[in-house]
Length: 320
Ligand SMILES: NC(=O)c1ccc[n+]([C@@H]2O[C@H](COP(=O)([O-])OP(=O)(O)OC[C@H]3O[C@@H](n4cnc5c(N)ncnc54)[C@H](OP(=O)(O)O)[C@@H]3O)[C@@H](O)[C@H]2O)c1
Image (cartoon, rainbow, N blue to C red; front, side, top):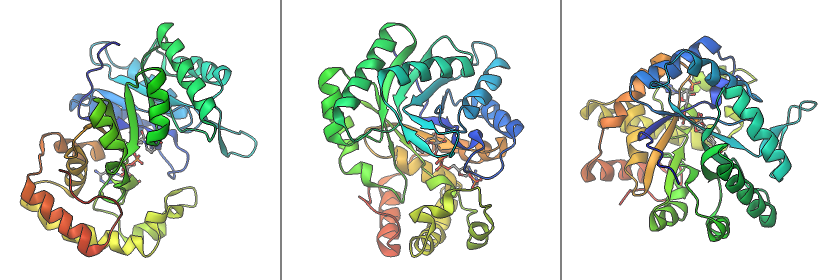
């Protein structure tokens, strides 16, 4: 398998799709990509389903403005599709669908090869998942993709796929609030030396510092976030309390809360990269400093106390 030299932080393109996050200006998305690249982010994570192809088209447009040496690596995903009649998503991991998706992604991205191709979500039938995993192996041998990974798989499914062919990367959520990956999936990837890419380190914006009850109330109907449990009570108030507790800690480190939240995910053993979303170049500027921020044990203990005392989120509380 070819090496894939990913920076510790990657840019997440979900909001660039323009669906589910309220209005998003394509020019801001392209500016965010260019700024991230300038600041040393060398990969973008996206998916065919983000905006039903729109996020990939925007990435394709942003890449076309860059010289080949500046171009970031592109990681995309397949297996979740949009029913254009209802607008709802559904999963399809059949070989024929995956192959069609791969071709469509290559066209939208303007690439000959995808750097990392991932099964976005599993389906209930593990036989189908294993067959899908074989299909990614075929795409790799055919030169359509460089590496293959999976997202949101539990360890039993990871075991079943790894028994067929090694997994190049595993994608799981990890943030100060969503810490379950630290229980089983991260120990699994660490034990096998498999690359773990963690996502939504800001809990889709909740941990960015500027999220207030007013902001929550003013989100447009087209923003999916208020429907997520973490954005509802009592979790929301616990998170606001956590953010109040962490703000002075971040300030002492000369960091923003956003940077602290990102650095905390990178402090977990076995995490090789974190995928952070941004909707503008300014947001990228604000979190880019996280690359160089390391949290020592005393800071990790203070964060642990804040998590335990506020009751915010769930899962293990201290990277060790
Ligand atoms: N494999 C999967 O199933 C899966 C699932 C989810 C995500 N992902 C990947 O992970 C990426 C990141 O996850 P995510 O987008 O859910 O969330 P995230 O990285 O936790 O949060 C990103 C959001 O936080 C806000 N934000 C970012 N920087 C900020 C700043 N400096 N100041 C204030 N607000 C800021 C922005 O939203 P607002 O400005 O609107 O608040 C932004 O869209 C996705 O784009 C996607 O590539 C993968």
